[in-house]
Amino acid sequence: MRIAFIVEAFPKLSETFILNQVTALLNLGHDVEIFPSRNIDEVKTHPKVGKYGLLKKTFYPPIVPDLPILQKLKCAWLVVKNFSNIEIINRILSLPYPIDSKISLFFRILPLIGKEKFDIIHCHFGPLGNVAVQARSLGILSGKMVLSFYGYDATRYNLDVRYYAGIVQQFDAFIVISNYLKGKIIKLGFPEERIKTIPLGVDVSDYNILKVKNKKTGHKLLTVARLVEKKGVYYGIMAFSQLKNKNKELEYHIVGDGLLSDRLKELIEELGLGECVFLHGAKNKEEIFQFYRDADVFVLPSITASDGNTEGQGLVLQEAQLMELPIVSTFHNGIPEGVVEDETGFLVPERDIDALSEKIGTLLANEQLRTEMGKKGRDLVLERFDNRKLVEELSEYYKFILTPLEG
Image (cartoon, rainbow, N blue to C red):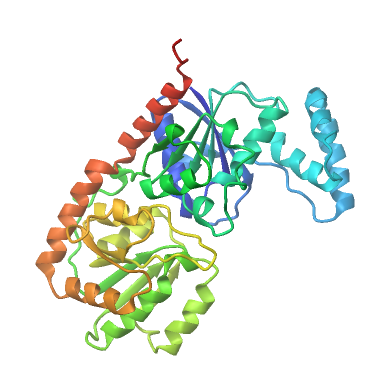
């Protein structure tokens, strides 16, 4: 199959699930091309980007200049450069939109023009469905259309049935990563019979803990997350501050970057935790792997953000469980579908600092419990969240969508 992935940004360290889907589909023999809305300037990249030659399969739109006059000049230059596709370009520039909107659309869609026919056009995150719909209406794309939802795109407070009304009927299928999200998009007007739940998976071969096992200290907490409101890292730090009074050797390692980085640094200083709570910033796969190996308990205190934004699944929870780490997280969105409460970890109400502290403390005080939960967590991931198996399921779903209906 020829498959187009329409995504927001690629490659992105915080969205390795898209990378893993692409590489697993390539391993199955499919031809995948990636069309991001924008380039991304990240110093660290995942090793698979180079291993699979993914940048050669990724087609970025031209950068839109800030000044209107430069936008028009660049647009004219691109029209001349792509004159062989002038008929399609004329359709775009003849749309009844303001000139700046037409230029923006032209830049965004340009990488799709002239491509061979795709069997599947798979859009990742709800708002990007508009890109595929516009491209198909202009005769640029053809093929079966699939739209995946991951969290914010189905849960923000400003969403109602009107938001996606213009694209619902344009897609052949919809994919969600949790049954919780399935319920959300049904309320947004998507037909239940065209919705498939396929959770995100972990590349099991990337997390072979059996090669080298570190000696645990019994004093290290770990969070791997973007530093944004919905990850609830603030509450993790507050819970840690309660525990630190009872355990002077305790450390909290936080891996990730984001808009709240400076505010969390201030909080750590205000609480006098600068020598035991560490913000490590963004790390690549090998570096994160080392943090998993050293940690004793994994903490993800996710919350519903002030704008309604939520987690989709919390894939790091599956990564941590694969590394035999017991979990302390929250009753939030799809998280209870990927953590077996009281067996592979503990779940507490959102924003409940006392409950977070209590459950973390319970695990830190009981090495046998940590070990038992860790082993059950690994078994859970191997059974239900193996990326290879889940992408095989995705591939079969593509084939199902492509199969003509009888009668």
